[in-house]
Length: 85
Image (cartoon, rainbow, N blue to C red; front, side, top):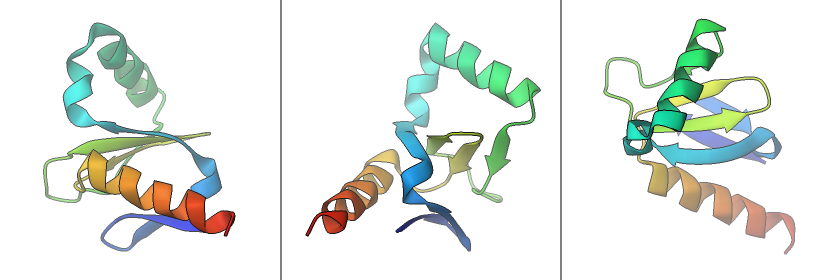
């Protein structure tokens, strides 16, 4: 299964570790994590010209998406349930 992150961008759902609202970036620990991953060139901005609303953590990348975190989580939960039915 795949998770659509916006535009023409999809990733394998089994690589997703977590989906987070960009608002959580206000926490010091989250800002530090994003700063470190950015300096290691791990960010992929799939929001294009839009302001990112969420970030998706995978095994090797952080994807910035213009789709709301709640929507992405709902999609990923749907995919998780679909695997077992």
